[in-house]
Length: 343
Image 1: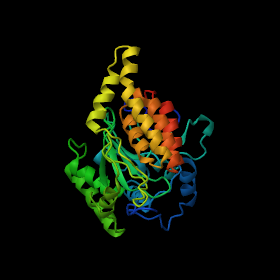
Image 2 (image 1 turned 120 degrees about the horizontal axis):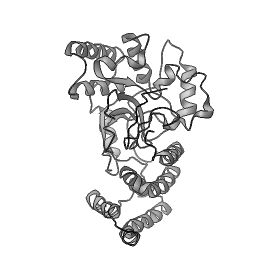
Image 3 (image 1 turned 180 degrees about the horizontal axis):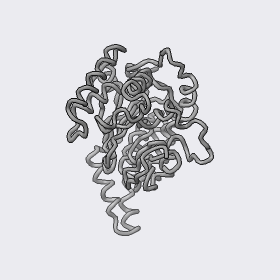
Image 4 (image 1 turned 30 degrees about the horizontal axis):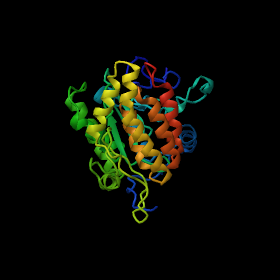
């Protein structure tokens, strides 16, 4: 097994890799890795299989965990914080070395949860029955992460900003966690060491760091997952995004009516306003306002499997038009396997 074998229902946790330019853009919070350790083969593997480049703090955090528990860095924070390193950290730990890839559905599904949008890449998960997890969130797959976001899992699509890097996220986790397994002395020891490493490598530990506030200025629409969406907008030409024309509250009520339909005829009737919105999205796409379909697609994804078909169509189209093809691939394989009891 590559991870905890226990199953969860709607949390959709990926237990292992088988079963489971026009306008200002946000300031990036980290740089690519520079280290005396040769990670080149690991970096190439992550890029080839997961489709992204990892920032410096990813490697620093792994080294931090190696210092705490040299023989098992993935478990370095389990005893004190109930946190386990997962996802791409498995690559650094060599857990993919020599693996039979014919048994792998997709690397994109490795530790992907039910409500994880393509922008989220899980790297730490809580080692108990809770599906709480967090990892990098990046608006553009071709760039470094914008922030670290956390999700409670089971019945919530909401994402919470936990800081600009993994060190800041764990610090935030320590400050907000209740009912900790480890003793205060052990937690304080880890916290102090974490802050020492952050200071050594000049990593910002504030949750609302400058780069995160810069991103907020670029958010064009609020979404059900609370982090909003960022798309290129040309204000001179007035293209890139147009509003849905419906509030989040009204959209929630509309979707609830569809879900509560008692028969096919009633459902078809309740679907009419949604289908009208999708028609408007098609007009928006024709006029280069790709953000409208992206917003609606993400909101439908956040409402669960009932709207998988609509979300798939809207998001694959939006990601393709936005030249974020990796995310189109991720959402396709995710929704295809979203029904599994353990993802």
